[in-house]
Length: 465
Image (cartoon, rainbow, N blue to C red; front, top):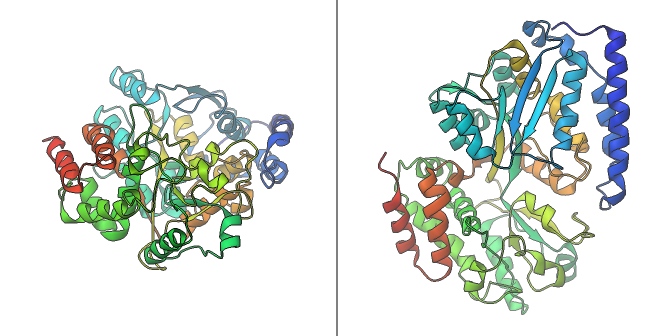
């Protein structure tokens, strides 16, 4: 790839680095202990001024893209979009190309409208494999370039590449990732009571029983989320489906190759019910089992802070829901541990992520899509998130660049060689199920419907084709 003259490139990159340093310094004042911007600034500045990656293959295959423009469309809006745009500056400074960023809260609806109307962006950051498949059906998505495909082979697991593949064609490399298989707790409570982090499901059950014996209501939960009420139950069920039935059965269940109400799914929901529908276990700080349906998912874990409950199963993104001043760390006010498998060696991981989907194959678009698959981008992007909230499953991600302890934990889980990652099942199911009947029946199940009746209703609602 032809770069701009070195003097011009160095000047532009230095200006970007100075801007970046000021931005991170300005953000540093309000961060929690351990989440300061100091660690990320130097690494980000160094990465921002290093154009060496673009002087090497495979980028030379894309030719001179100086002055070219790439349009990018996403659901990530202000202020969360700032680190994304900062991370694109290295590409812009070193190649001379421009990335035009557009964030839209209505992205998931509008990207389909635009694709069908022939007005798609060059690249979209797509948050679900199901949505990717719908976009591919429009005929507007182009296959990923070979350079990006090779990077994914090298830096990600096969499961991640599979989620970006539709009908045997690899379209969309992965971008960020999140971990849903987490249980939040109070480190101080665990230390005072002598509780240990469980490493198996049996140990998790024993811990819950020990807390009951100690006079506590161990678990708190909430599934209220407006029109999406019920979705946290789907995560519980999917986590237990992975653990009690295994990843192969999970895949078949998500694809409806085995019935939604089959014995595997029944066992999984009943396993979740041993916690969520156990009157001795829930709902600490809120009421009885039925109070789970009226407690918002945002508020659900907060009673951990005053000791009204001890455990809350929720994803890594829940770190943003703790009140200002809460220290999220292994020695802080709250932290999380991995929701264990049936054995200590089994590491099933439920999570989500984003996929870099291209609608054009011009050289500058392919070059940018390839850049987003590199370890250099992943590490720069991590450095630009001093308050946390961004993790990649890229195997070359340097966890030391993640300033948030919960992000570091997520990266550790994702990079575990024994980890078996599976995407959120409801996000891959037909909309009539994943964002409709599954949510509805999950809510009914909490308020009294039996496992059999709830699963039968979902199975009956599955689209015929």
